[in-house]
Length: 288
Image (cartoon, rainbow, N blue to C red; front, side, top):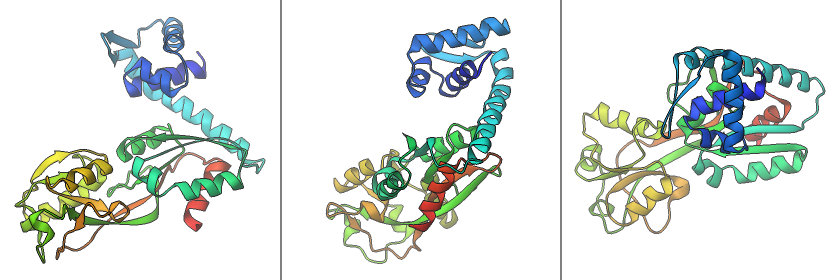
């Protein structure tokens, strides 16, 4: 049993797919399968049930998973602590960010970071904030740069970097575009175009509607904010978007609703040492 086999096992278990695990680990699918086969032979136990394209953990796999995660996390944490003793800022840094932050917030910080620390190899993955949140908890990434959760996990450290003011928007041709003092009750009379249930942004809005005892009339849900902006521009309904996405195709609704602010920033694991590259990136995000 070695760390490469355990990493392959944990990645397949998390993604539920050999092909996706191979892609994430920059391996071929046969290489992933070979590592899993060797691990199963050494343990004399089948770890996955493979039914068509579906991959599920067996009872043995479920027993092994938390232990494998703990072993990998301990080894990685030890490696970081030893590397940090040198004081050098170099090596690989695995981070993840949401598409919106990666496109509209992060570029100037990454340019500054790469110029300051050219020996750091950044491995950046893009995913939804909620997926990244769980990935940091499991040790997949050192840092997540995401929409922060309104209810932080006790094992995760959240650092606010940006305050993202959200605006109710619609097409200039929509009836709400010419209305004044629009309330939540008024919005409840028109179709809404929103991020999917379970997302941190949707949770902030749902809380407002729940408190006002108004039904949220969702017509379409997608987690791509640029898609929501496009749909709103067609007149299909109203949406809730950050200031950075406002343009001439949509107009801000004149509402009397207190501004909704979502917090964007960094999330890391409290019980794991941050590498020197990760510490420097966190510091840069807080100072620029």
